[in-house]
Image (cartoon, rainbow, N blue to C red; front, side, top):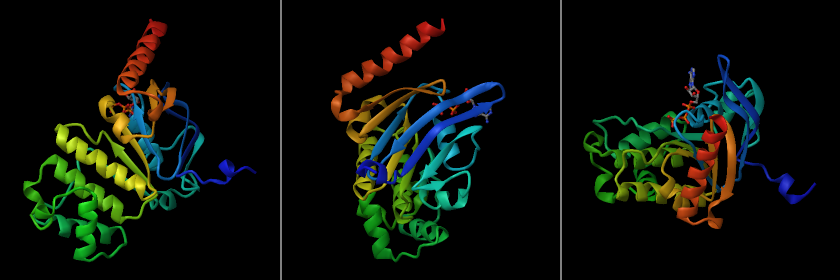
Length: 248
Ligand SMILES: Nc1ncnc2c1ncn2[C@@H]1O[C@H](COP(=O)(O)OP(=O)(O)OP(=O)(O)O)[C@@H](O)[C@H]1O
């Protein structure tokens, strides 16, 4: 067996199919993500990005194929797999009357980990939240600040896979930049990241690899280091346009 084969991927989807009625929402989808790798899943509305995340989280069951998180089969052991996953939803819900530190210690405890205030501050800083905000009530937090606390909660969980759904939608450029840095910091800890996104322009900065999904099929996968930001955009637009032409 070669070295490549002995590596346990943080995430593996093998020929996954998901149907809603007579429609294939996902068709033979295969993706493998290594520890420490950031993978951006791109695609237009209805491509199947959220369905993919819901299958990985075990909220939906596939009609065919297999999903493994850190070597754990999601179909056989959904709770075991979920324990390896941190999920950052589009809107991070925090307790408004608690501070960032209190929210983090509370949610970490719910996830089975007790952390003290000093550890909470370190995690919040790693996620990019300014120290002045650590002890402030979350009620007044912007979307970007909530995302950072969400990211710190994900880091506290010691997960091996971080899932993000449209993390930069509704963020200004500076907040989106901060989030990208937080994602890269998570990857540097060895966490694999799968992010569903429409944000073509940030993909090169944040992701090592991208996949373009359209109508449940993966049309292309590329290393972002091999493409300029402009090439990523034209690849995306050309692939979708050629599919539209084929469907017409
Ligand atoms: N619960 C459901 N019941 C029926 N059809 C569904 C359900 N969830 C998703 N679909 C369909 O599956 C397809 C994929 O949807 P999905 O939400 O995964 O796409 P997406 O890429 O996340 O889109 P967006 O960028 O708009 O979030 C779409 O055709 C959608 O209408």
